[in-house]
Image: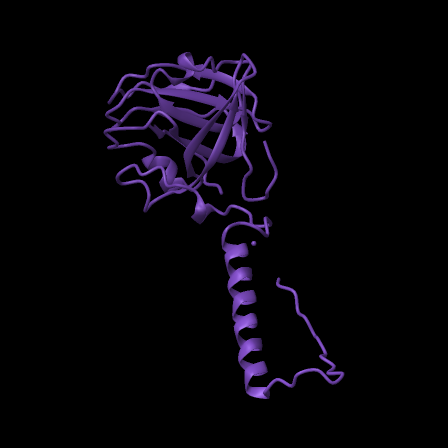
Length: 208
């Protein structure tokens, strides 16, 4: 599926300072003290490192590079990807890994030539403008469900079970900003319709 006439867009350790006073007790050789300090320091450092890498600090945030790639052949090198949440008609939330088509050349290619699409993977077309956008199935070999959504993420139109390779124009019917393509049958199976909403945090870090 590709857009027919898209608009060009666009994560410490503690420090101890101790002083030892000898009031007539046993005397420790300075070399022994030094070796002990080295061992203790090494132990503290190792503990801190393990603490951080095991998530003890707890202040890391996910970035795009940490997200699992959808892994669709031919798309990973051409599209960035992100997580999209769909709040369905029944109120349930479903999570998808989506490729982002934000530039003209990406929107023109879309899911062309893709032969297999996982159930939780899709492509989100992001437009700068709100307009009536149309799609077609030229060079697209798998049937799709197409979800058109307004700027606030509200689903406006859903087209199910598109015909592969068809040149028929599939219109949003009303002005929209987002077009989501999913594996055919997904919207029916998950109850995604006109009372659903797309929830996505984009480049400006503002949710739909």
